[in-house]
Image (tube, rainbow, N blue to C red; front, top):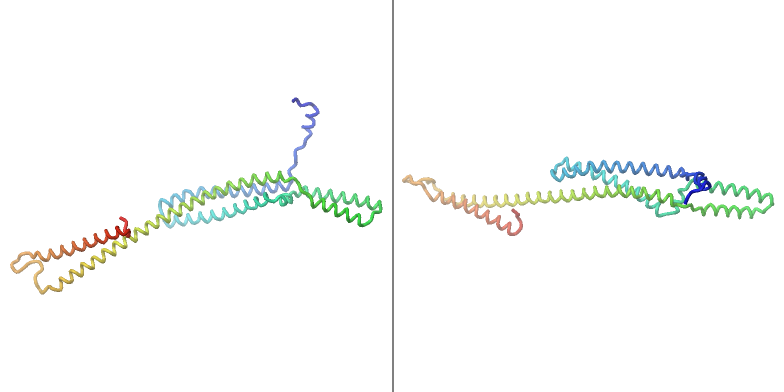
Length: 273
């Protein structure tokens, strides 16, 4: 449908709605807070992922300290973001709190009520009304002001926009937190595996030490029967085979006992080779 001159005049004459000052201040504060939190979150992401990847590839004191600092920063930033999100959620859930934020309209209504009250009071004085009538008028105006409930849709849309933005920041922090938890779990598994390897080595060394002591006892028993005789050659100069047979038998017995002990440990699940 074509727009006539009258309609054109009406459209041109429409003035844009002026945003209240308190909403401009609120939006500036929320925008500044979201920008600051998002910047800190981005910086944390850029530092966290490479540091955690380096920690998984090489476990060292320096990398563990960096991971600890990253986790501390993550907890601090997450707490601040969660606090802002909770406040926005509280405002969105309570229409009365949002209505209380319309300061400009409340002031305009209050001034209008005061002007109307003064005008009515002047008329009542001219009509020589009683004081009770004045009290009833005052009560009616107070009730009118108390029952002030503006349309909170505009403020609700503003808060919902920043609520979604804060939710996105919180989700990024949650992803970083999950990555930190996964890295900690991987580190704990790796350290447990290293500890198990050390325990297995300790068991193997203890077993070898026990069998070596048993061999020393056997050698000591044979050594008690030596009475000033040549251990390597007899009177005719021939090599004594019994000595070397005893040594070989003792060593072979110790090795056999060690193999049997290790096999028993593997069968029982005490040693995993």
